[in-house]
Length: 470
Image (cartoon, rainbow, N blue to C red; front, side):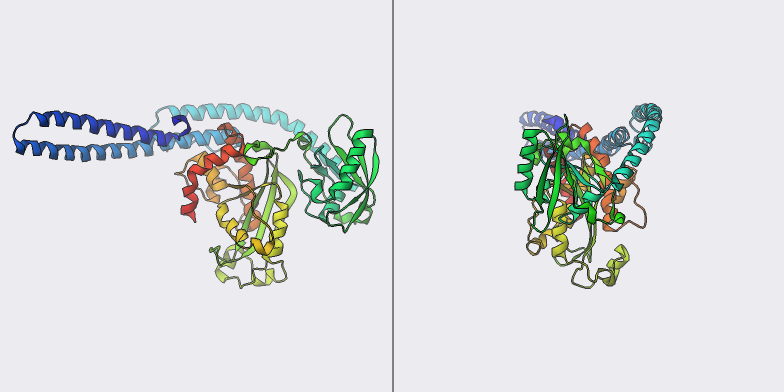
């Protein structure tokens, strides 16, 4: 049980036990002496002595504990977080030797070991970089080639989850909803015809032709479904869809082949962190009061299999329906003129809700941003029942509650750079938060937190941070 408590809390409990033990020993000693004194005046003196001794002893213990906490416990916690960031998040910041000056040779030894490992890592990285550059060039050529081919194709897993889509298919899917890796094809196409075609494919093992319909019934597609040989899943080609797409609408190839083998469990709590889909978002608003102010911008990016999916993002201006205060415009640079004609929160909220379907929603100080969305849930005609993860709390879990947990401070610790022109824009802050999340995921796993449920349990210990922040 005690091993699950933080180092600082265990040290605090140790000093509490020391204080109780000291009070117990002194009380017993004075009580025995008190029983042997016949003079009532002396007996009262023993009682007074015990009271003074108790207050003095407790004060001394508290003072020593505070010194120990500031000069030993906190530096150890900070040192372990810095080493973990270097080991698992690719951070190269030097160990804070000044903060750990009372830890003897521990900090220099840890810094030396970290530098040695970093040097070996750099040697390996340089050797890998050559091959990586070659593979990247091959990928770029392949992507460019597939993007130019006038075929709209989607690679799907056996459970009909999107594993790959090309530029033409992205535009086909966008007519229905935002194209997204790991999204179910049933969010775009009617399940019946798709399942029937898949059943025929599974039975025959040969390419088949099929007619598919969009989920809203407005679009009909002539398509082909092809097996992948020994690999699981299938390739879906829209024959007549790409012909109507202008060349300038082409988009890059988006894929993650690991999704072919991913299994989806029913409960988020038991899912592995690496296999989760995260939608990291941020809002800009007319003010800081969720019960009366309004959203003026929503930005979001998707993280799948521990990496940010390029091209899968939202950047929407929102008409708040009320004037934007000048003070707010100075922060996020969004004016009344810019949001004129933009969708209202009802429309924008529905778009974001669909974008975040079946994903964990992540934000920095999530209660603040979610309060705006939940207040308008009825207007959006949606339920905000997504699992929520807060990077403020993740920062507290990994770096200690005593540290500063603003987005700027977190990005500084993890060497995430927010371009000045993108700071305090919804998409800019969402991208920075996503980059921080990607670096924190391996750090969480190194702490033995491999499932979403384990991470949520750890963050609950720091819930007070958000209450104070808000």
